Length: 566
Image 1 (cartoon, rainbow, N blue to C red):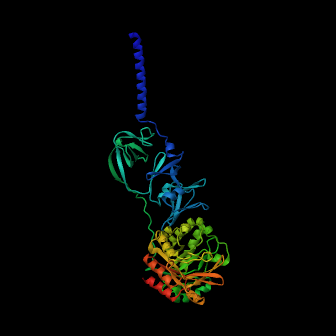
Image 2 (image 1 turned 90 degrees about the vertical axis):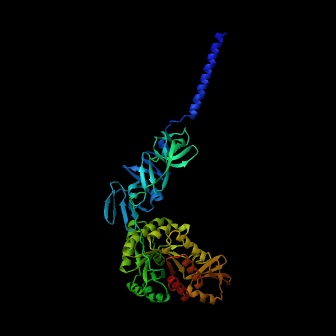
Image 3 (image 1 turned 180 degrees about the horizontal axis):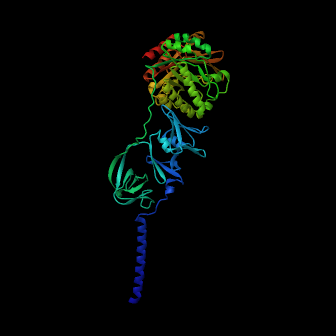
């Protein structure tokens, strides 16, 4: 009987042992730490020659590349994260960067760049193209940009800002894992005493960054000695300071519309009318072709007479008058997008201003398409450098800012130019077929608020309209005509229209029927101008401009004079 029982017991014991072993293996599998290494190529998402980019403590989708042992960023990455000031001319194979006092150039594929001091060799190719992608050497970008980078095996650490960071010390040899959990793949072995940056602390695991910028997870029980460390910013970059030429007191500018040489003879009449102005801006210059040439009605005697009356003269350069007058094909894009043509225009503007002893340059480029925006901004940068070195005030005329015209880049204009003039009118414009005010108070005020978000207040000049629009609606047809400030009173008297004050627009409004048509007019007069000037005073602007001389009334000019003296 015993002999029969013993084998059974042995079998049961064996079964029990096997069962316990199986359970043990399962428990071991469940609670033991995985030694599986992460696939680092997959983790970083890179292929050969690429480097993943860790910006501060976050991975970005863009990649850096290694070419000839040097690190390169593509142009979009540079613009989006580091410095949008780099300008590429694909046709002329040039890379440009304009500082406060110089425009630096490098040819594609070259290891040299040129500035006002001559040629400089870098020991690496500064800018190169692969396919349709333009790459800039990271070390060259650093010459003009405040950032630091550190290269590791498959990734790159990029810093553009510095502050304080929380640190922890590794208490016992452990691993940094891809995710929180002992089964997550291992990114890196960690030794006792290593210091990591604490990014996020959870219940049992913490997200950390190692000294070689690997981001992963470590068990909290393996961390000790919490601390704070102040990051040290780079010291090898000092930004150039943009200086501005400012007038004493407020700008009070009158635009003088001159359509030919004979228009210069009207200066005395304009000076007699324009009470309180300290700047006169004659519309002398207009682009004539796609090569950067312009026509000129400039007159030295005019400048001498204006100076003798105590006025500065800012010559106006536009991109539309000659085209409108002659029907000539003039493409602003063709001129502005060519480094050679743009440079020719910039130099000619400054040379002409110097020749005629002008005090300033006023740029009035209107109707630019969005694809011209980047080239227009580069034009203003390059022009600002030469104006600054020549002692010329640079002012730029702009539409009231909206999202659809933000490529005019008021923020950059506010940095590189001396005055940003907002044309505070054309809320409803000639030919729009949409009756309404030329410049209601909300339109003006909101436009100035948006401008002041981007431009220092002392550089902002608001231009007032010394005209209004009479709207005629006949059935479905809407037509309009301009009426100047000095004629609107007589016109309303002739048609027996009595305007009433409209609090919404802060303008006198009149509406009447005649011949089956409806007429509407939102009047610009001394009352509406006064309200606008009060708003401008509250916003502490750099001054006022008026479109245009020859349109005003004594009452309106008295208001302008009082504003300028305030």
